[in-house]
Image (cartoon, rainbow, N blue to C red; front, side, top):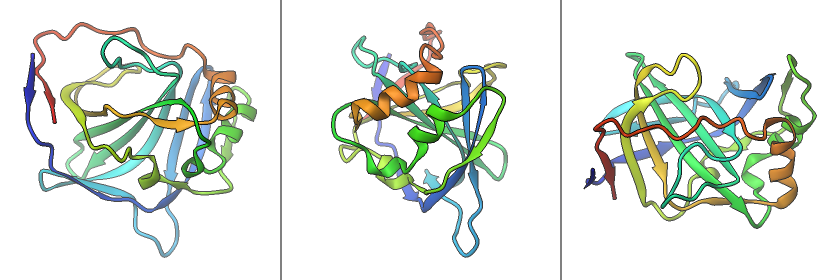
Amino acid sequence: MTNTAKTAIAYQYQPTTFKITRKDKVIQAIAQPTKGRADSKIKVYGKVYTLKEINIHTPSEHRLDGNKYDVELQLKHKSADNKNFIISIFVKQGEKNQAVGDLTTVVSKLENGKTAMMKSAISTLGLIPENGDMYRYEGSFTTPATTEGVSWLIYQTPVTMSKQQIQDLQKNLNNNNRPIQKLNNRTIFSN
């Protein structure tokens, strides 16, 4: 079921540096505090969530009109009362994405079981599509233990990355997506 409801979201994103870890086909980009700079945050319906990490899936875990995308970036946020909010962004091949800094290069060179620091920051606000159409639903994490109680917001408009950037991500991650799950009576909101 799909309902139309406007999602009130405000971005308070800062350029953010990440520590990247790889375990098999799972990449975690953990946000690192930067001296003199506030953490990246969002405010959704008045509740503040702090950006904690970015997960990368190739191909996408969500579908739009039945179609999958080359990459899905999942920006994981947590509130002071431990509520989880994930913003999902589809990626398709096109122009090089300057907002991701050296993320794709670091991921492509990262050996299993290793950790590396990014040299350049990700312009997290630059990852948000200009067209604000989105879907929202209550679901679960997509990686074990797939715990429920996660609010999801999926942008309908993809951002672009160059062919090389996408290939850099696919090198160590290809097919690390969770299969599509049944809705199980969830309501999907759109605006």
